[in-house]
Image (tube, rainbow, N blue to C red; front, side):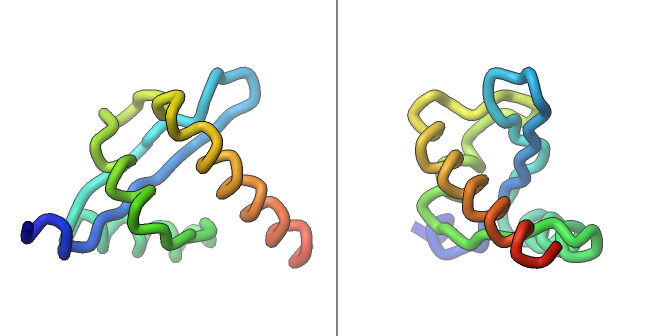
Length: 88
């Protein structure tokens, strides 16, 4: 039960031509803090979604996201792209 309360974070990367985004980093607690810190330093958009982070932290690093997450991750990417376009 304690795992549910710990902060979780995952980083995704998608490059044109890949089948799906890959998980490039994932973890809980201090590791999650470090992922968020690095994202902020690099001006990488951060999307807070507890359910999605729970699922992504279970995916092996450098593995593509599972098919079941395509729809929700696509929505996150679209949201990030929309925000990016507003600030450019």
